[in-house]
Each structure stands twice: as C-alpha cells, then as structure tokens.
Length: 395
Image (tube, rainbow, N blue to C red; front, side, top):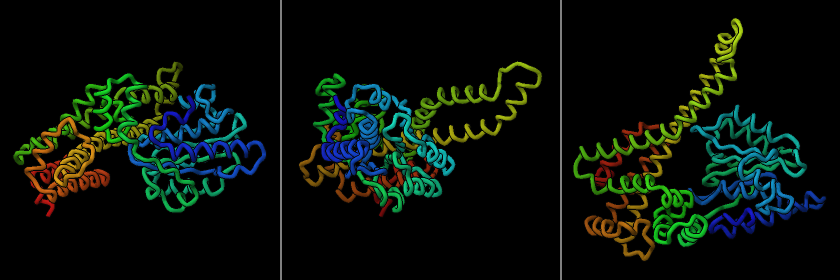
C-alpha cells in the first residue's frame, strides 16, 4: 500500500499531492518542477486527517519511489525518525518565538540524503504572534531544498502573510461509510460497532477508532450525553459541570503523570544528579534549576491543553446531540450522529422548540470560546449547563 492509501475520503486532496510529488521528482532531476512549492498549509475540520495528509506527503517526497509505503524511508517517516524530517507537535497552549527560531535553524540545513529537508508543523495555529513572524521570515526566504508543511483548522487561523505564501490543501470530513469501512477492514471491528463509532465520531477517524476499541471512551461519551436529561435543577447543573471538569482533569493527570516523571528524571540526570565527586552533584543540580523550572512550566501548559482538549471533545459531543435534536425538529432527512439515542432525541425535540435548541447550541459554543480565552473551566461549564437547562438565559 502507498502512503496515501490511509487518507480516508480525501480523493481530491490526494490527487493534488500526488501531482506535487511528481513535480518534486522532476525538480530533483533538473526539470522545472511545476506544481511543487516550498510551503504548504493543510487545513480541515477536526478529525479530517490534516497531520496524516502532511505526513503522507512528507513520506512521498522523501521516498525514491514517491511514497511506496514499504521502504526504509517511508518507515522512518511513519515513526518520525527520518533524518531529513523535523516533526513538531506543540504540547502546550502556544508555541513560542524562541522555539520557532530553533525550528527555523533546523529547517535551514541541507538534506542529509540529498532529496528534501522537510519541517512538518502540526497545530501551527498555536504559534504566538512573535513566533508567526519568525516563521514568516523562513517561509519568505527558504533554502532551495527545504519544504514547510503547516497544519491548521482553517487558513484564517494563520496570519495572512503566511497563508498567502503557502499552497493550501483543504481536507473534508470523511463520510460515515468510508470511516466505518476502514474500521471494519483494517481494525477488525464488527460492522455494527464500526457504524456506531463512525456516526458518533462525525467523520473523525481517530475518535471513531477510540470509540470502537476502547470501552472507557464509550463510557465517558455516555456520561456526557446523559447531561441534558439530568439538568432538572440548578444544583444538578452545578453537579454536572463539576463532574465534567473533574473527569477532564483526571484525564489530563493520567496522560501526563508518567511522562512528566520521566522528563524530570532525565533532566536531573543531564545536570548531574546522582554523579559522584566532591562538589560535583550539588553544583550541577543547582545549575540546572532554571532548566527544571522551565520544564515544569511547559509541563503545566501541556496538562492545561490536554484538560481543555478533553473538555472540548465533550462539548462537541453535546453539539452533535443538539444538532440531532434540531434535525428532528425541522424534519431534515439527515443521518443522526446519535442514532443509538434516537428515542431520547425525539422526546427532547418534541418537548422544545428549534429556537430553544439553537440557544442551547449557542451556549455550548460560548463555553468553548470562554475556555479558549482562559476562563476558569468550572465557571464556564456551569454557565453552559444552566443555559442548557433554561435556554431563555441567552435571550
């Protein structure tokens, strides 16, 4: 299988990328390479596979056979160890100018294996304003064999001077049947579970795979979708908000605890903790105090991001739930993301108006905006659950 075969439901984007790979090969052979450029911006909704498409493109550019999928080069790109690929995944809430300048330096070198030097920057929209300006300078004057692959939800998430210098590849939400087919054929998921996960994930194949294979993920989704029916009073709204935030905090702690411990131990080791010799251990550990403090700051930022992302997944599940309610109220003949809860959705649709449903959806989106603006999660989610109980609060 070639490297582009895993891009589910992205036929148009795949065609563009294949043509660019052919143009890149022509450029390496001394031709004009028309259709290949030094900067690309991969955009699309959550779960559309932005980073997967960028990774496949990187593999195809670095592969002598234009992305065969089975050679050493393709395998190295897959696991992130190729010497000519710098793969950046911002772990915190933002990506600083200092980090970006270091990244630019890495991308400025000549290719080790003689093809391309590629920088794959996931979540490039997390770059701060100063970082974006540093990135712009690198994209404006790139070395002849350097290719930048940036990923962001939409072109508008990048400053106009960057996106105007990039070729934009727009990915779409994969159709349910395509996601279900992948789960059934590649992951061995039973058909009924595959269709349930594909609908519930709304085209996000990573989320669909987790729903299909992890019972705990399914359980947490059920807890989130039980919120609307539980909001019988103010105290219930407060309790529901507390449960949601607590669960997200526990997820973040579980995801970061082991990693934080390993990172801290490694840094202490680098700065001499445990070394022998008079005065050696104490002096080197003291010299690393600043580095240790910086690491702790990065770890806190990462934990905050994971917590926020966990809450956001829950909020998007609620958006899909009320979208189904609205579809039933308006008689729209569309597939329900929550087909497994159809009776409950129909009951809520019959007991409220489309205007109420729109206000409830707006309350969820306002909560997302507040969380992105660093509002206290408990306060933001409480305001949302109160508005879900009584949508007149948004009038």
